Image 1 (cartoon, rainbow, N blue to C red):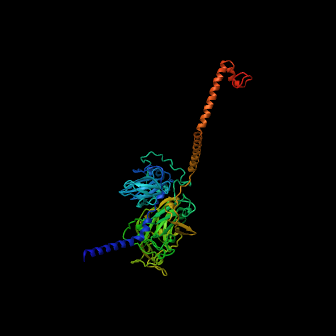
Image 2 (cartoon, rainbow, N blue to C red):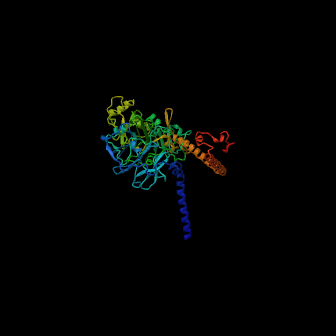
Image 3 (cartoon, rainbow, N blue to C red):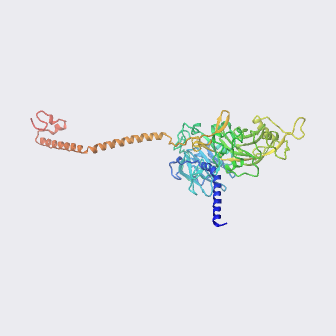
Amino acid sequence: MNKDTEAWIHSKFKFARIMQWFIVIFPLLPTLAGRCVTRDEGFVVGGPGKDGIPSINSPEFNHISIADLSDSSVVLGVYLNGIARAYPTYILRWHEIVNDRFGNISVAITYSVLAGSSAGFYVTTEHESFGTSGQLYENNLVMYDRGSDNDWVQIPGLSTSCERLRRLPLMHTKWGTWKELHPTTELLSTRTGYDRDYSTDPYPQYARNGEIYFITSFRKGANPYDLHPKKSISFLLTTGTTEQYIFHSAVISETGSFAFKLYNSTSASSTHAQLQQYGAGGEDEWKYYSAQDALESFGITPVGTMEMKDYTVVVAYSPDHELQAAWLVATNVSMNGSDWEENFALINGTTLLNYLSVRPTLTWGFNDYMKEGVFDVFTNISSAFAEANTPPPGNTTHNNASALSVLNMTSSSSSALDAIDATNNLPSNNSCTMNCSAGTQPVHKVPIQFALYRLPLFRSYWFTASAIYPRAYILVQDGAQFRFESFDPDIIYQQPWRPWMVASIAVLSVLALVIVSCLMFFLYHFFNRKKFAKLNDADDFVNGSLKDEMKLLIEAGLIDPMQLQNGDNPATRRGVGGDGKRE
């Protein structure tokens, strides 16, 4: 083979490789482009410049025993690395960012007053720490990292170059609720290193009025913006891909909890409008992420060696207790055909329960929301696997104990399980031993493995959430049913009107009127300056001549100066003409 032939074959092979990569990557280009949700038009200077609102970089904490804070005060609670800490929002209003460490883990706790949003992030050595950039995006905090000096938008956790931060789960709740969940919690001290009056609010009445301060794409007369009041509370769950889910507090509080699968928006055969609650159309009709893909989309590393065959994402909100959290629950059996996602319930505002048929299979509470891992739950083979249409695992045994072990979350006694049944008015289904009385069949109990992972659910005002994610999947209530719905609105930016803007326009209008009047007066006298000069000269001549003649008449004794002081006009006296001469 000569060199020319070899070169020709090599070039063709190289071209084929390029085309192969093009064929693989081209269908993904819309997805890759959609990963970055920030828009240049949404950025605006927010007033104070870079670090004008200073971050807290060396936080100090008080022990709960000396914490001086009312139970109704709002805090951002974080539990990480065995440490619980609370960050009061009355301090964060003045700083917006706290750079902290939980052992060897660096984090940034952030709070955007104008967006009503809170979010936590893991901080890498590349980032060093975070500060305020002086910008806003859709009225949301824009941070910058002191390592690479990139700007990051808080809610999406995205940089302007579309890099993504890893989120840290936190809870936006009341101090009374948080210290009940974590009796050994620490509380951020007002010893921040800055001279601030933390008893005052730098944004008085903002949370209670309807004003939006800066440019926004939120507008009336279009969905999804019109679904809820602009400053009502919503919760957001975002994956590392293109999926964003919004749960408005008024909707999620109606059901207490909602379980669903992550929708795969990259599927070419599906559209946003086709999203339905899982189970409505079946997996063959609707496209969802697998359990492994769902974990990867949240940046979660699986624990243990459990084979994940099915999963669901559970979001729960208890308005009475100011509790909100989200979890990914995976299992080693396929639940296709079962109604296990529809059977998640929030009991008494504190306990999550899932059951197949008439027996609970999984339960945990907000008191244990921070616990994660793999655990076994013993369930009834005749109920769980019959509904799930799944062959039972091997080594099925008879068991007379209703064992329930969820990371030590609940008691493993049968009385505890029966208590759950009584709480939820579920019929009891006690098992028996192999030596059952006549007519009673033994109940087969088999362990099902479950894995529980916390997800970062964060809070925001509705107007910011819907403006940043106008095409998100939004939980809506349709009668007694709950489903996701998405919209595709036009993105139009506008500056919202506020009272101070109206007052400013009135003042500027009066000022402009004064300036125009002065300008017209100047121009009139400028163009008529020659005429006014002649009039002034004539006036000076007349005044000067009369003064000289008047002085001569006084000297001649013809006019008495006292009469002039009394207002007697000599020019009108009888016998004296206007020129002062006697007639």
